[in-house]
Image (tube, rainbow, N blue to C red; front, side, top):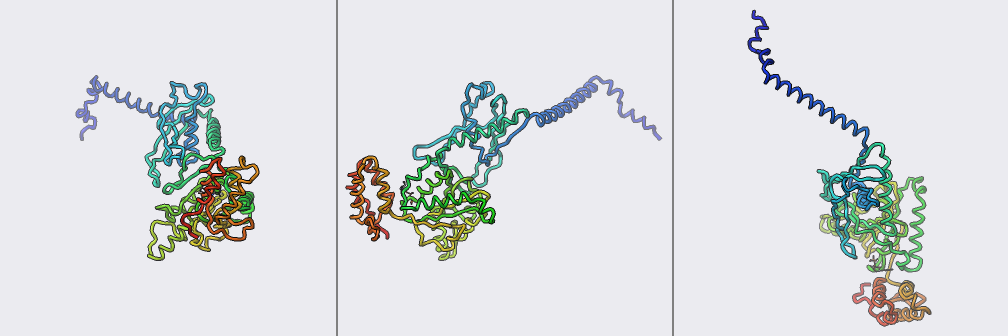
Length: 447
Ligand code: ADP
């Protein structure tokens, strides 16, 4: 049997270790390994320190606070305390242009660009990282984004302060304004910058109508507990119908402003609006907004069309609309307004408590409305009201409004929008308005 140690003859270890090159190599390898271990421990140590000492707050683009925080980040800070230049005042901005320009021009917003910045807020240094994610919103195709704030654990309370400030900033920017949302594919998107609130007094409906609806909404908003106690979904629906230009949309917008709500608008006639999309949008309704479903008759017209050719294309169906309206209301109140120019195309099934609780016709201009509108436009120059009387007499003569007793239906009624147009054309000129009253007669009259 051979002696196992005899194998040394094959591995001349001593010789090897005595070789300075080899020993040096081992030494280097050892050092390398030690460095790797040290590096790993340093990383682990750093991440431990980070975990212990630092605190992160992530804000996703999906959260409603994202926009306010971005807006807060762009605020110029007093006394250069915000970001020392060395640390990087936010030099890199990106521009976000409103996709639907407002009437007064295209609006844009400066936002911090992508990347990492250091900011200072009340003695705390905070690292802010705005990054795009590799995933995208499959409805809009836009990449997800995330804002990460990191600061020392000891300064964690600064976040509450920042979020509160950002929220106040967002609120103050919206004070006296009505925020409008519209559906973009399957998401809600702000429709232009917040609009100046429309005073409710500026919308003139026939006697008592405005007051009746306002009182109903007021009562609804005061009764949350009543609904909760009875296990009834906390929602209320209104249907406004009547010819175009009678002030339906203006009234809903003014009402929203009056109760400090925004408006979320869906046009049921919009291309690509399907039952699924509608239901999805209603479950994600922006908080504290009034839902406005315009052209509610579209769903009913579609039903008829679908019945005729047996095919239901990319549209909202009658049952889709009912299901969406019946959909579970979240804890928050839900106020829905439906509008239509064609009440005759609607179906009884819609007028059911919870879907539509109140139906109101907003019709052609009445004598009362014409008088009220006159006072709003010319009240300060028509001191004795004689101009108004002349105007009303002329409208009566033309068959646009009834006589004072209101007994006979007017032959050629017109819209309040047309009266407004006449007054706008004759700003500060009452005589001109009386003379041109004939122009109010609709050219094409559809009874
Ligand atoms: P609708 O929604 O009934 O078609 P809108 O609210 O869009 O009518 O009105 C169109 C325009 O006419 C708006 O500029 C609005 O200010 C004006 N208008 C129409 N009706 C009234 C009204 N009853 N009171 C005040 N303004 C009105």
